[in-house]
Image (cartoon, one colour):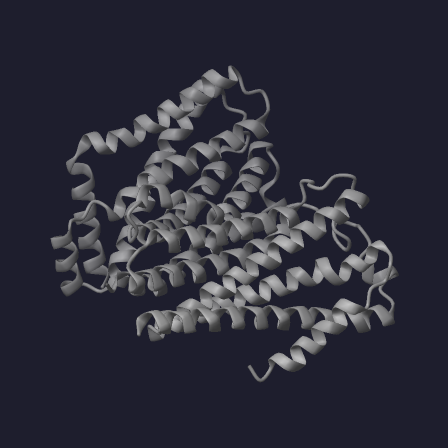
Length: 207
Length: 218
């Protein structure tokens, strides 16, 4: 938990600096996706560890990272829907990035369903770890492939100008990149705390 | 290793085709699904709808086929395998067998669609090539997922839940490529889509190869 203090501090910066225009959503919505993917990646790393080492604690960590990633995913979708409602006129449009995010949430819901339906803990660890790894790889492929298959309405895709070209001034960049980093670290922090409490709980019930 | 995979393949085929009614049920499933589509749509005028329907039917019927691959065996067999062969060999054999089964199913689905819903596909050879490539990715992906679902109490219900979100990228590439073939576009303008499908095959098989031993261990 040594890294939690500078992390929370960085996170604070990202929350406090708000431009009162719709572009301020950039700090929240876009960073959510970065954080979600990073936390899911963390979950996968713990799954690999759990699978190789057979350590129950890594299994708990993988689960809690996935929970946190889901949380970021939901926030990302909500902020995106708010933004889309004003700019595209509808909260949900047929856009590859929206579909990609919906699929990623479906994948992790399936992950929790799988965890819920296997009762033996060791078996659950192996099976859910394998699914987590498999699903994450497919998710990354999906995200990487989407733009090739369909134009996106998102800024920077399909002939839409990216924010970076017009609006993203240097001062905003100075906030945006720390914000990305801050949210990622906050994600890891939350997930780490959750995992810690679960692990303690687990140890208590075992004793 | 290849020899043992081949032996396992033969064993799988023997198990599968011993009960002809079960194998037949897969084909009846396809035909009745296509018939349901035919009766609900009356006629399919656009190639896009035809294509989408085709892939949905293929997805569901291949799920149905692959689902059973880990339920066929009883406990004694599993124990015997556990001592005599490596898990990598088993998963490769199962994937190969399911691939063949899915190909057979697709070979049954295409004529059924032509007969009942017409044939809007212009570039037939490319369409068939795309569906064969997609069948490989479907069967490999579903085989691995059904191995996972088989560890739970409710394998039949869990396989689609786990498999469909994961299979979606494959399905989207396949629909896009098959749609282009149906519209009669030149293969050279979208040659990368079949290549992506082939890459999916390789990635999924490699992942199964490495992940399955951990699934199998208990």
